[in-house]
Length: 305
Image (cartoon, rainbow, N blue to C red; front, side, top):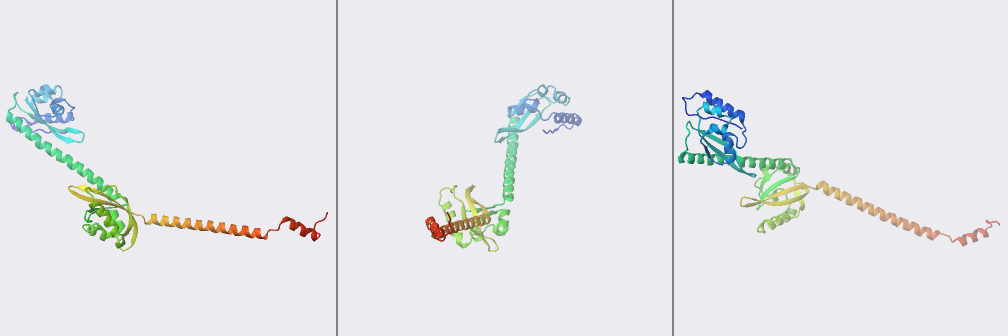
């Protein structure tokens, strides 16, 4: 998509080379196989073209002839991507006579191609890494859950903003310190240590570890309920662990409120059943058989023929 012209012939008029550059810029991007650069895009290897203007046809033939440029060396610069090898740029070298290149010229061109291909490959790797890092930072900084990375000996190496908010401990205060000493009360430290020992005891750290529900401690000393999910990952030759922590205090409170309401409802239903049973017994005890009631009323003269 870009073009430039290098010229060592100071006696030539620079305006003609400027016109060649402008013409090249106006044609960019050239299609595969179109013009001298298109040859490099198509073949993906170094190619010598005896008559450059003949490859250009109506593209830049007039400008190449005005500059008295005859033969051309096309040097594609490639880089490997996930979709395969791709031509990232094409270098054009022209000469003022129709000749075949020397072995030395082709060797130099190959070295230039290899060096520049390496540069493009590193740039692509850096872009991919930066993209992954930016995405990781976005997740770490936006999630409401604390995400903490620790080593196998429980040392904190990453402490996201949600962890700062949840525990009241800054990243500077947390980094390098044992996680258990930072946020785990003494009563829950054995449970946390057992989980780490289970990881360390495996040839490769386990991945299907159940979530832990335990107590945690804020910087203020307040204890609260958390759910912790620990997952291992390999960083080079070293295994590390990422802990995803959520505050389940509200969830616990809702569970307790639900259990309390359930107990109250069950107790109320039991009392209602007992009351109904008592009333039934009392009614049965006070009930008068019908024949006794008739005899009583007749004896008192309350029933007339």
